[in-house]
Length: 233
Ligand code: ARG
Image 1 (cartoon, rainbow, N blue to C red):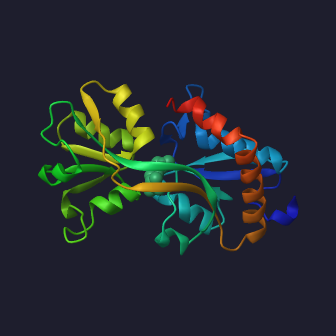
Image 2 (cartoon, rainbow, N blue to C red):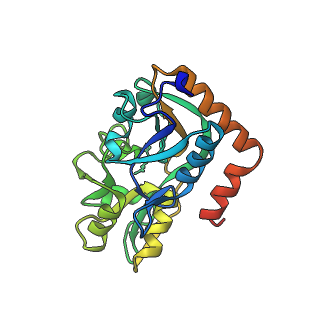
Image 3 (cartoon, rainbow, N blue to C red):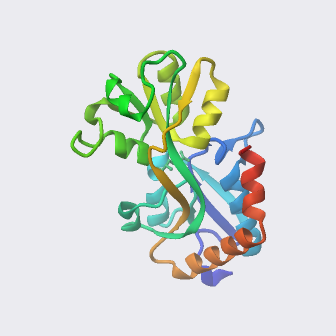
């Protein structure tokens, strides 16, 4: 599959940030698991390749593909116009919604109350951070948005009272609330998003191959099966 112009022969390098359960997380024995990891493994299989997870900060995932250090970016990665300037996206394979996590006794009861927060924790480089750090005129909260290296650290800041709310994708929000006592998720379809796989703009052949494999996995129900395994309706 040399004509696919891969980072390494026979391998599919996936740039991700493996602290985003249930999409990507580390296992106790130093491996990786999650929805994206399993879908990417199936895609790699279809292409006759072995998946290699390149774990990095979320804000490096797109540049890693742009710089030719990874073949694909798969990280619960939301499609948006800004990112489309830097990478190409496959078709969408699932959806997400930005959710708000607050302490159970919080006075913040809905997205309309988010302005009451003195500080809002987000993960650096994510759409949640982009929305929250935007100006007030644009519906954001400016300097109140605090960027943390990952969701777990943002949630830790919430449990220790450093921030009053955390804005993050809904499925990780569920996982973080499960793992920490005294937190709840506010039901607000804050922003609906679509997740897709990023591929270098210089590698149309790979984009096509990955997209074809992905669509086969969507059509035969594999993607849904993997999602259902990690996210209980
Ligand atoms: N969906 C959000 C975004 O694309 C957050 C993704 C964070 N992913 C991760 N693996 N940490 O900005």
